[in-house]
Image 1 (cartoon, helix red, strand yellow):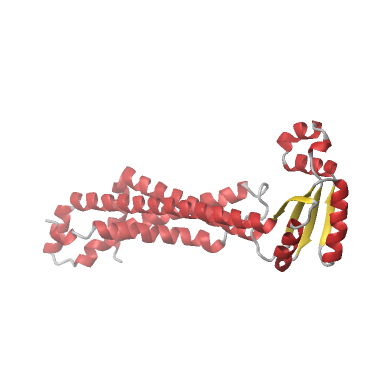
Image 2 (spheres, helix red, strand yellow; image 1 turned 180 degrees about the vertical axis):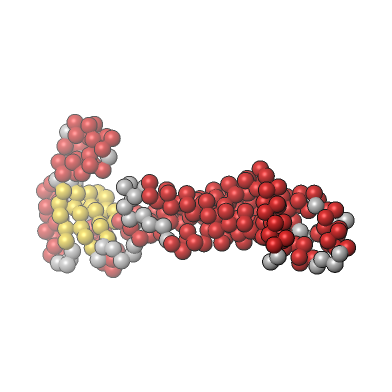
Length: 277
């Protein structure tokens, strides 16, 4: 592209003003939001919802004696299953570790308020058989498995992910509309210049190109800002979520997606350019 065209691009970027900044911010927010949701979704699938992990089946027993008897019968019925009995005091201590903000209250309660538990580590394929057998025993009052919890969590995560991406799509649409309006205003401001360019034989492609490049640069800047913010958020959360990683391809994709979105808005804004005076 000629030096004059690049000067035109720079001028349009300067003249985009506050509207251009709004477009950049919208794309940055969309990038952080969409990239963050995708990263958290992938982390949950890898760390919490992995299908290949061993399933934990927990049965609530009616009492310590019943829990011990149930443990013996489970070992005889399923020799490959590793099971342990948690006494009421152990259950109390475990809950206190899970909920440290309630630890003071939990540890002051009588341990008789906590039931004994039978906890079994089961291969993924044997989960249903073990859970069904435990539910049929008179010593149990409740049987739950981590797989059932995973299924509920996976359904909730899918809904949250869909809602998040719907918001991202709305932000991208808003950015495209802002770039469209910026380009339309620039076209109207440069109507006389466009007329002169046509009179001296300039092609429509030469006239349109600086506007498209300006829009794409605004979008790329917003995407790059979003990628930087997403990387910074990952760095800040590395202590709380050690397994959380941001894919490199995602960081590289954000500026490209921003440029494409903004260029599309600019192209729509130029749709009526041939009819301009």
